[in-house]
Length: 411
Image (cartoon, rainbow, N blue to C red):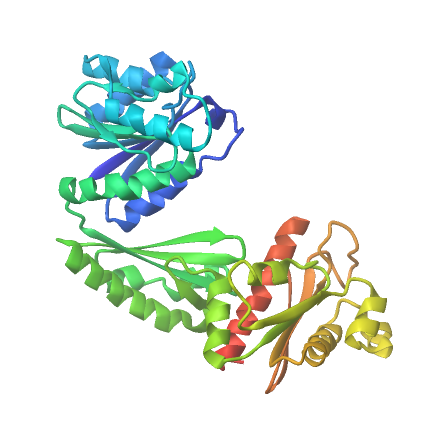
């Protein structure tokens, strides 16, 4: 089944906020085996919204729209849908009571404008909002079924998973299965060469690539007669892709590079410390986004050379001979952190994050990182392109990928 996604809100057109709803819905629907045919965005403009909704509903069997369900005068979605369907708006007493309960729990006053959020097109099916106040709804018109969800992302995602997904299982017969392989350490061009004939070897599979920060996602989309056949086809293609890509694949599905590295570390039973320079604590922050007390001992941001020598024991001779941005200093930082924190493994990063500070032999973006572990110390380097923030993020991901490979015994 094809679905059209519609995002409603002038703030989206003006770039005041990012359209994360369309991105999330596109990924979620693809996972469910439903093909997203088109994504459109309109402002809070009655004629434009009327034309767009009418056109999409006439062309596609399924429309999912977000936004325009609030209490203010520019929230037009329910009114426009009622006009298109030729029905009045009616007060849904259950939705109104739910709004009153939520506001009372928050100590807020129930205002006349809140009643607007409970006025839905007659004959529509209400979709409860378990997070916020704006009720969603679905409506059938001709051969089309349309779902209208709040624009607030956390309200939208909760309503979609709780109340829309069960209805989609009835409406659609998914014939698609998607597997996403997350890779690190190779550009899209190299991955494309390694998988160049994968589609030919697995008829019905489409291979796509997406660059996300320092990682490249390889998406395998399989279509077959039914869900089981599509899943089997996707898994066969993914198995061959993993063999071809080798250690470049660090995770699948929703896993991040941090989760993959931590999982490998925990499998070893090792404790960890970090020593950072150019990333300024970003690596430690990423490692502690999730509970980390069982493996993370601590870290040091040794920015100045004096901190590198006094706190972590980096040799002044090494600093003079090779410079602060060097593999030799990265190795001594990691080894010093391992000693200082009495841990099994330590990571270190030093580099030139920019936008200034580079030279002909050490350009902006040059980073060296190291992993000191029971078997020795491994050092790697790369010149990262992008803004200062991008260089820092890519360097942090690179050292986490090194940790993953060390723990797996690949280095």
